[in-house]
Image 1 (spheres, rainbow, N blue to C red):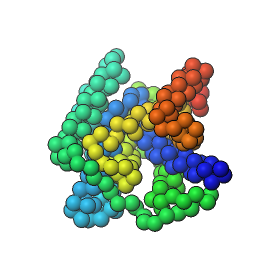
Image 2: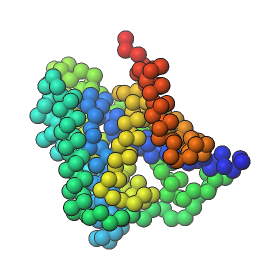
Image 3: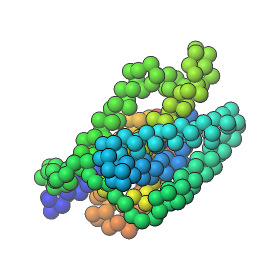
Length: 290
């Protein structure tokens, strides 16, 4: 019994780490621009496919594949911001319009991925080989690395946002774009940087997922849904809340799978999300508006 509980706990930590990586980029765009990027999951797919192409098809190795996947996703994110989001800044219906334009980007990337790479299943090799033991539970070394790597990446993003001039500029733009512009901050550049950094995180997540799951044109659909649940559950506009919500949801999901099975777990998660929003409209860790 104890071994099962420990294995479930480790599984929850792995899910929480993956969800934190998935949701951090989505949260970054919301914090800066106040919009959801529905192409975020497709950018994960793009990163995984490009990483596979460079690593496996061209034979340059997983390190080069990861860098290429992150770079490709970042470039795609900047292009989405430039051509599908920026033209609508200031429009009173911007939130609704960007939902449609980023959904269009998602469909374009998915269809393009299917056209370029086909529908045949692909998979990346793990970053590290072998097994590891966490609290006595055996997991692959790749999964253990993800559990360790996710908090390090989130800490790096937080340090960038709070301790660098560029990061503080992005936060200022997110709080008040007009005031930020008056003190000399280039608002458009900050928006593009937020999209690019968010997309880079999506590409990295895609490469990591591509070593656990099979890479298909729809690889990012479920991660996008889970990322949205995490961001809303934790409270919009806070990276710390996103990380905390990811850990909570990962652990809850792992134990729900143990108790209820895989079939009913998604439904129960949505019920819990609705209850949280009814009881705490600003999210589990969100603060009420002053």
